[in-house]
Image 1 (cartoon, rainbow, N blue to C red):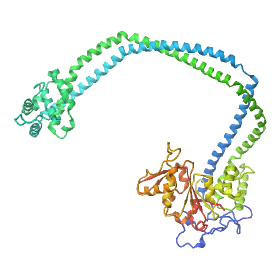
Image 2: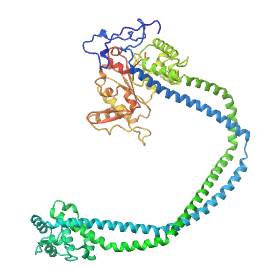
Image 3: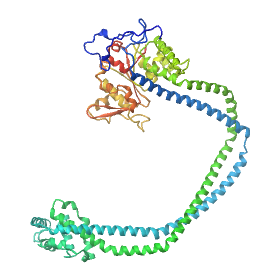
Length: 640
C-alpha cells in the first residue's frame, strides 16, 4: 500500500524447499515473531506472525486462480440456486392465483371420469382374455412344429460333429499304436500283472480301477466277449499282436451289447491315471475314440430320420405358424393401446379424486398463501436485485476470498485490513467488479455459526477471531496451523465440529492415536449400529495392535458420523513433526484433492485416506514458527 516499502529479506533463497534450517545458518538469518517480513509492510508495523515468507512464486498465482475458480463454483451455485428458488416462488404464486380465480367443477368431472374408467377396465379385461387364448395356442403350435425341429437339428449336428472328430482322432492314433515298442509291451505286461493278476487259489477279487476298466474296453473293442472274464482279459492283453489287432479294430462290427458295456466303463474311467504311462496313453487314445465312433454311428440313422420327418411337418404347417404369430402380434398391439388408454383414464381419475377430497382444504390454504405472499413480493424483488449484484461481483469477491485464505492468516487484524484495501485497489484498476462492502466472515461463514461458537466459549464477538476461524476453514492447499497462546482454539473448533477428535502432540503413543483417528474416519458405518462406524480391529501388520488400542482409547468404537473427519492436533511442535511419518505423508494438503492418498502403515499394509479428512494444528509456541521452514507447508493463522 502507499506509504510502505518492502522490508529487506534475510533468508537465503537456497533455504526454500528444505525440511529445516541449513547447518551453519545463524539465528539472526531467520526472522523472529512479529518481525516485519511482509513485502507490503514497513518498519515498526505489527504484522502478526511472520514466518519468513518471500515474494510469492508463480506457483502461488496458479494456486490462487485455482482456489478462486473453486470458490466461484461453490458460491455461484448457491447464489444461482437461491435465485431460482425465488423465481419459482413467483411462478407458484401466479399459478395459485389463477386457479383461485378460475375455480373448478370437480364433482361433475369425477363422475364423468369414473364412468370412462369402468368402460376402459372392461375393455382391457376382454382383450387380455382373447390375447391369452391366442398366445396359448401359438405356444403349443410352435413347440410342436418349430421347437421340436430345431432341437432335432441341433442334436443331429452335434452327433455328426462328434462322430467326425472321434473318427479323425482314431485314424491318427491307430498309426501310433502300431509302433508299440518292446519296452511298451514289457510295461504293459507289468501293469496287467498288477491290476489283473492270474486266477489262483488264494487270489482275491479284482479291484475295479481305471486301468482294469481300460483293459476291459480293449477286450470289448476286439469283440472278445460282452462281459470279459479275468482270463479273457489276460489272454487278450498278453497277445503279441495285441497292438496290431487293436489298431485294426472295426467300429461298425461292434454290437449294441458291446457299446452299452463300453459306455458304463467309460463313465468310470479317470484319464489322468494314464498320463504317466506311455502304453496306457496310446491304448486309451484308440479305445475311447472307438467307443465314440461306434456309439454315434448307431444313433445317426435314427436322428436323420427324425429330422426328415420334422422337416416335412415344418414345411407343411409353417404357414399356419406364421399366420398365428401375425395374429398374436396384432392382438398384443391392440392390448397395449387399450392398456395405455386405461392407464391414462385411471391417472386422471386419481387426480380428480384427490382434487375433490382436498378441494376445500386446498382452497383455504391457497387463499392464505396468496394473501401472505402478496406482502412478500417486494421483499423478493429486493432480494433478486441483491442476488443479481452478488452474481455480477462473483469473480472479484472470490479473488478477494482466495487471496485472504492464502495470505492473511499470519497477519494481525490491522495489517489484514491494509492488505484487503490494497487488493481492492488492484481489482478496481483491473476493472474487476467486486462488492464495496465485502467481508470474509459475512460472505462465507453464517453469522449464527460463529456467534454460537463464541457463546459456547463464553467470549464476546471478536472480529479478528471470527476472521481467523474463516481463514482456517478455507485453507485448500495447506493444513491450518493456529498460533493460539490463549489456548481457546481447541475448544472453539470442538464446538464447531462436535465429533472432532482432539489429540495432544508429545505423548508416547501420539502417532498411534493419530493413525487410529485417520483410519476410523475412513471406515464405513455399521448398518446395525445406529450410524456407528466399524472398528479398526480388522487391520493387520506390525502397527495393528497399537492402532486398535489407540482407537479404543479415543472412543472410536462410538463411531464418527460427521463430515468432514476433523482431527485437532494440539501442542503442535514443528521440529518434532518430521519424525512423524503419518503427518509427513499427508503433506502437502493439495495431494488430497486428487481423490485421497494411500497412507503406509508399515511393512506392506496401506490404508486409503479420503479427501474428507481435515487436520487442524494448534500451537502455543511462537519460536519454532519463526525458525522452522516447515511452517511454510502449513497455513499459518494468528488466533490471538
